[in-house]
Image 1 (cartoon, helix red, strand yellow):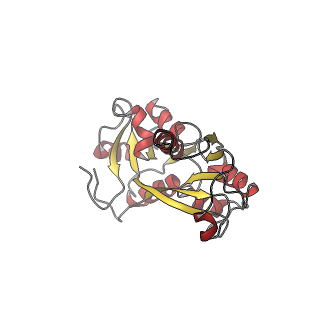
Image 2 (tube, rainbow, N blue to C red; image 1 turned 90 degrees about the vertical axis):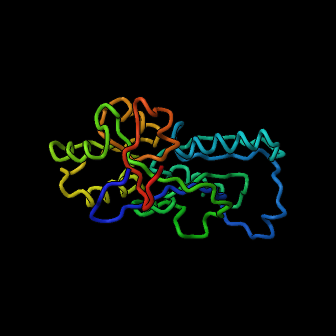
Image 3 (tube, helix red, strand yellow; image 1 turned 60 degrees about the vertical axis):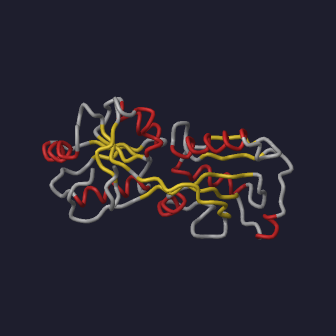
Length: 235
């Protein structure tokens, strides 16, 4: 699934958990929740962070890991800026968690928000998963990477993503550089990864860069990967 390229392209979506504000280690280790915990999700339903959060909350409930309810709240917007700003407003209160990924780095690069990175604004709790990005297409439009490369030379292809300067936009720019024979890709931002996958599955564009979790609802009939951004070939 990996073509010959002019440069190596590698990018992973890292999902982790962060608290709303920094807490001393000793205080955090002895802390217990006093009221319901709010899980602030930076994407709309169907986005990678939303999918992971629902899985984690299911485990918490099944294993009875929390003495208080843990409530998911979707706050999409600004590639995480809305949710991160909300967390900043709760600073010092550890009853607020968020799953965060590459956007915690890329979002502050394009706009000034109260929570910047790297900083002491967020307390990392755990790294949960490292998820590879894949190049996804509708199977009726591009069967494999060879067909994709041929098509991109004949017409300008449209990609969908989560926003300017976000991790998928960075990856698509690297892809463009690695495939100089292709016409310039058109990039259309969406609210989240779930919306991106739905657009390609509905044949409204040519390709996207998504995590596997975001693509699986449409796989394999309407959405399939033809390239994984990794140094190692995936089986």
